[in-house]
Image (cartoon, rainbow, N blue to C red; front, side, top):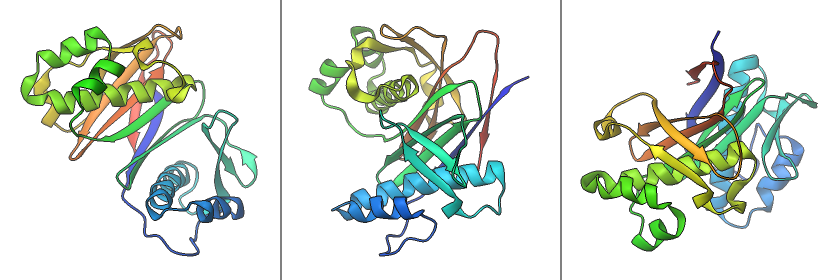
Length: 232
């Protein structure tokens, strides 16, 4: 039986002085941001996660009964009516938009959302492995989008590991992306991923989302299958 992995994409959120749907602690965090752009991206991420979880649990569940807290390493966790929901939650935001993913139990996951943009040669040399640089060298017309995809997959893997950007990104690698024609097609496509810093059976997915690229990284035991379920 396939393991469910729920995900959603959320548009920018209107910024108000008092934001309905936040818990008291979340509202305090929200008001503590100095800049409107940071407030907006944080809100979009929180509401992406709340919408996702409310849809899975109970569509009538008020958002303020779902609280997203961060553990000691900064990873998000979901509290529902004061109780830890468990499972694995991941959130990402870019340019005001946000993506969230949730696996009920037994999986470690990471999601990342990135604006598809040009990456400098210095950036690629500093953060990409030689093998990844080789992938870009053969895809001239799509190199910028491919570079964004590779970077996003690294971010997803580090989130799934619970490490964030605390390790050299060249310790993890996108081994293969597949047919470049898929970069303009809808739906999820597989990625081949590997890691030098954490053992595990890695499964990766990516999809084109207009101005954005979305990636997922999952530690998945051999023989288990995934069912990627979008919440709209």
